[in-house]
Each structure stands twice: as structure tokens, then as C-alpha cells.
Image (cartoon, rainbow, N blue to C red; front, side):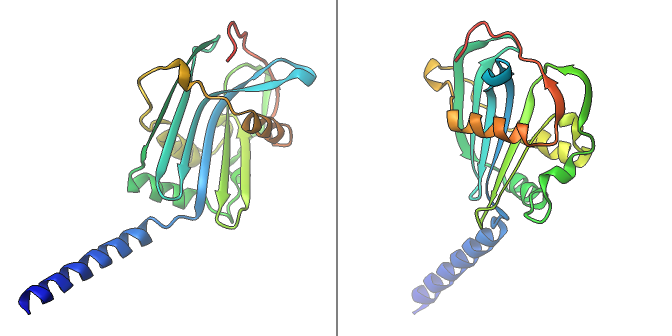
Length: 199
């Protein structure tokens, strides 16, 4: 009888721990995609080249992708790694991404003088009801608290083994990013960096 009671107690504790953890990890979003990119071409031939991508899922699953890029050309190599994010990051993202707080509210300015030749960032947050909130921007255009959140995302561990088979391309996402940029708040003249080697 004692053994049965002990086993029952252990099972109840495990169930309670699992329930508490599930409640703690319940998120406002289903996934968030963070991308750094730059433009290629010009005019009607303007395209998007992805430099880095981080995808965070509701269950804490993280995918980090990098394409070898040195601000001038692609190396033709990339890294691709996956792992679980710490609870601290998930809680931070849950507090920062809310369906009632649109990403565009974090933009404090939308103009820059002259031409801009640096990387841009794109964020796409999908919520449980399939509502999607997107933003293409220059990091310096954002309020400081939100920029600090993004820094924690970009400081997540990245893969260290470069591999030609890991070069990341996603034409659908690239087209989506370009569409978001054209309809977004950024008022800049993009300047494509010279590409010596394409993906």
C-alpha cells in the first residue's frame, strides 16, 4: 500500500510540474521570424538577399540560419542550427509581441537623408488566430526598449560550422520581405551593395 501511495504521489508531482511548465511556456504568438537582408539589383529588378534568419516557435524551438556575407559578397557557404530557447527569452518575447501592440508602434522615425547602403531588418510575427504583423525597418528607427529585445535575439547562439550545403534561400520569403518593405514605413533610397558572388 505504501509503495502504491508513493507512486501515486510521484505521478501527481510530475503532472503538476508539467502543467506549470506548460502554463509558463504558453505564448501570445505561434512563431516569429527575424531577418537581416539587403537589396540586389535596382528598379523593377530589385531583389532581396537574406543574410541571417532566426525563427522562434511557440514551443521554444529556435532555428538560426546564416549565409556567409562580408558586406561585399556572399561566400557561398552557410550555417544552420536548431535548439530550444531559454525560458527567459521566451518570456521576454511573449511580453514584447502582442496582437494589440503593432510592430509599427515601435518606429520612432521613418526618414533618413541620402542613400542607405546597410542591412535592413524584417520581422514577421504570427499569432494563434493566424493574424500576421510584419515590419521592415532600419534598427535605428526603433525605440530603444524594442531594440534591446532584438539585440537579445541576434545574440542567440549561431552555428559555427560553415557548409556549402547550408546556404539558405527562400524565394517566397524574399518576395514577401520586398512587398513588406514597399508597403512599410521606411522612406529611404536603397543602395545595393556590390555582389561579387551570388547565392
